[in-house]
Length: 54
Image 1 (cartoon, helix red, strand yellow):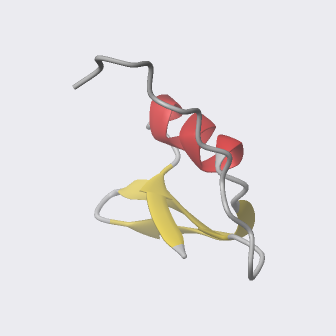
Image 2 (cartoon, one colour):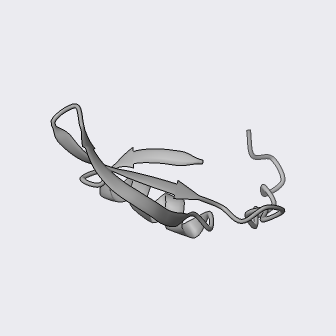
């Protein structure tokens, strides 16, 4: 599960990239919020770190 402000474009793009889908939108703390879920067993693809990366 993930909650995020819809105005946070970077977080919204990351949520989509990680496979989250929208369940609902609601108003909280004076801003529109987004609630999403990821299907069970869904694991994001992770790129391997280059050698020598810290």
